[in-house]
Length: 556
Image 1: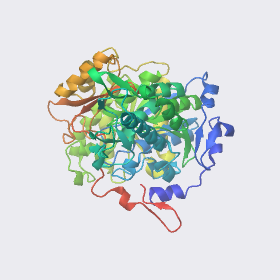
Image 2: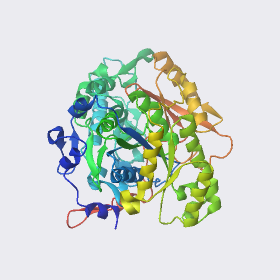
Image 3: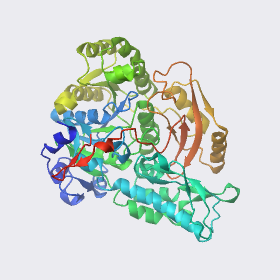
Image 4: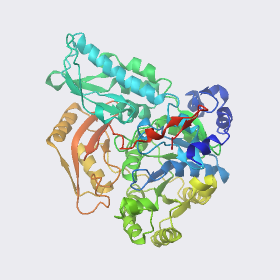
């Protein structure tokens, strides 16, 4: 059966019953049908003095184009913790329509470990991403309306882009303002995908509605004479934007196929944004359960780095343990095995690819100081010899590894991992071991260099003249203490997607610097990375349909 058929053939519990498992009452929910709901802010207020549970961060080695199953493993672990008698909850990101209709497909897990209702979550869900798109584009409309009616603020350079939650490469560069109406001047512009919008980052990093409004008002929209910065609050846009986001700001509750509660909220990509679900969702989850399983996007060089250096620092939280997801196919891919051959047994390629795993493991364990367990996410194409090779090789290096078979067996396929995590967390309890890669008072260049050298293993950093000039402007504006969010390919530890094995001495190439004054971080774009992805030659959208029963088919 396909993932969508498995999900459809599983009887779900009403969301009010799921919520009761973690102490949320019906009147504290705003229901969107029978199986999904938003959680009111009063729940956190009621529980704010309760001690936090343990947070388990799920990250991964560098992935292949289809991903390595972080969400599948996260769901399997949460279900497994529940199976062994622990009170667990998931805290995940919302899927973007870009990958759903693109190459990667949905982001609700797979096989017997899924969050549900999967079609709803993968498509419109509770409308959060639509609200973010609307808030983003309202600001764009207000900017151009202000210019049309005389431009009192003296905007000379607009840097704010519109957005849409689809992969549409045609919108990367567009010319706007061609109507020839009064005061309307043509300009080169472009669209970002919604999950790369600063509004998405703000929603995920804001601590409450007042903080959300403050950050929205602080969005830098452009510059006037003498490079004077102009902000969204100068247009009085933050109130209306907050109104559009008021409901979206509340976390969403759903369930796994095994009835484990799941909070799904916010969804920035990790290769072009900061890759973590919302702070309000994670902090709420920590009050609701003893074990919170959360994930960060793409490999540990991207999602985990931003989760730890940006999100954890801002929220003053830290993982009790980290799960590093690996697959045999991805290890062979990063060991130089051709893509068409990675499902064939190849111990030599597997051994070479382990350097990728060791790199991420060393960063998490030694650079950040966190306890790490490797999850080998089993595929039915993995040979027993390859699995045994992994078990033996990692054991010789004193790296803890557990085989996870959640896709085929559900939570039962991850009980050994769940027990191992409980054991590891108990041993390291009350140790505030998290170390950051850089300090906020480091210079912008130092922050980028520390990430590039310590996390990516690069020799040095190279900047374009434009990037250097923008760094100087940011310093002059007084934002040099912001953390750094590097936008980089997910396919290699380096910034070259074709250097899969991260061979030789390489530098990180920063071609653009973007100041995000609302999100309160600085984006450094490395290599050939785009904030508006494109569809593949055969997009997943071609296989999505609605059958005669009115049921959606083809989402995977």
